[in-house]
Image (cartoon, rainbow, N blue to C red):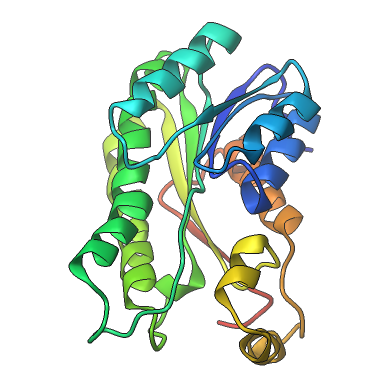
Length: 243
């Protein structure tokens, strides 16, 4: 079974949803966790999780802010073994209506934020190896209407994983991508209306959305020694929607 005894994980977007589920699971498997988010609810979660958890308010698109994240992880827990690039935003804008500012924000969070995180943890991970997971989306497998900003940026995350896998393999650092389908989290429920939620759920062969814990278990596999021969890979977790 996967075990993360003694390892230290940084999880962005860690206040709720998939990030919070990953934090709980990783902690149960022996890791210490540093959660970052713009949502201040992460502070209460870290307090609940106890002495092996810390929280920082952090915008992943703020490159300079990553230094504080790394400093916190190393000063509190002594090392960095895992990075989960989970922070994300969503929305619906057709291609003729999305603004340059909104498009840039998608890229800043999903692509630049993930890149800055990888760059920030490299010195620590190069000392003992490590594992990175980029959380993309099944919107990076096909086109959808009104999803251009979100979808294009998630496609770019797939590319970031593949190129980084080649650059980092000699350092003993593995990087893989999870592509979740519809997951029952606050982000999904905020973005979708009731009719759209029902239609999306019914389109899934399993006739349900996933739950955050199901993505967390895939992330656990990818950061544990159980996936030691995997890098640059992609795992689709969508109830069969893209089968």
